[in-house]
Image (cartoon, rainbow, N blue to C red; front, top):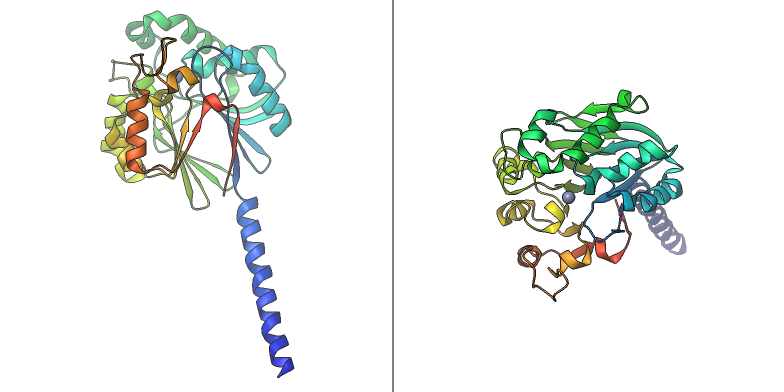
Length: 297
Ligand SMILES: [Zn+2]
């Protein structure tokens, strides 16, 4: 009788060890994601992801945001970035990258871009041509040009067990809100979790995404398009149906407050916040609250 009880308890101990081992393995095979905070009075977007010993950056923010990004790359990535995705060349996404390439020794492995012809930028967003030229000059510089790759729609980039799929690239035929609507959209699968980075995708390219990729949009975690306002429409978010929202949104924009009080501006952030609440989003992580680190496994 005593032996039988011992046998039974040994089985329980072995099962417990196996389950703990499996949980640990899954955790160890996860990723760490840092949403970087804003360091100026403007909006920005920057994410740093680590998958085992590989470091991935999505955008990075303005020049003012570069030092915080550098500190995080040194602390987490040991001074190197293996994969850098630049979703589009607007300065609030690409200027920290330019600063790091031009003025630091941070080692960069691969740079993924989606870019229209220079004349297209001149034609459709001439008022921002200087920042676009700065970006082009940087990626064409001797230091980095061999590392730059134009992504293709549907391309899959595997980084350890993190699978990145390119769901959206440049859309030269969309000429309203042109550069934002030519944002790279990246879906990331890690274990059984899915993350979707919409960058600054606008209404028009959001509709295109919905038409062409509807069955691929569902995600557990979504980066809110265009800093959480005036990005994709509610129907896109309904299809994504996320549990967690990442908001690259500074405080003034989060509160739609241009300095004259809560919800006195013209930004659509509060409307977007209401959509996500109605969808049943459980957690919101907002840029205004500082660097936020999540373990996803
Ligand atoms: Zn932006």
